[in-house]
Image 1 (cartoon, rainbow, N blue to C red):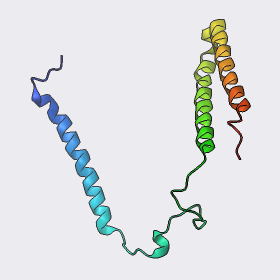
Image 2: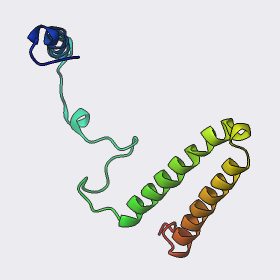
Image 3: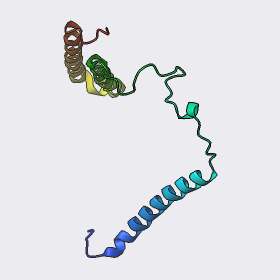
Image 4: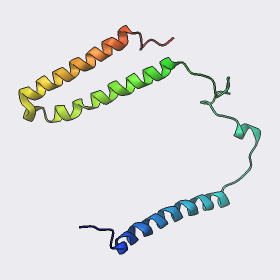
Length: 123
């Protein structure tokens, strides 16, 4: 049983914490000392895929962008659940098949709902 009455148990954690903080600090310091420092206007300009920036970076983005991103993540993560099921399909048998069919029906209903609400339209 681990108890708080033995502070010597915390010494390895303290040493690890000090090494981690020290490594980060030393890395940043060495990087600052050896890197070249010659800023100029083009180097300090924002970079957008090789194209000069057109608008202000704080421009509002349509909510549709975020909705499509969230839908992509939801459906992508849901599909990840298919892999373990496929690996263990023989052991799960008919119960696993019915369970996965219910899962897929729910997933397809969600996809059709998003499609009918035109959440996937990009305009």
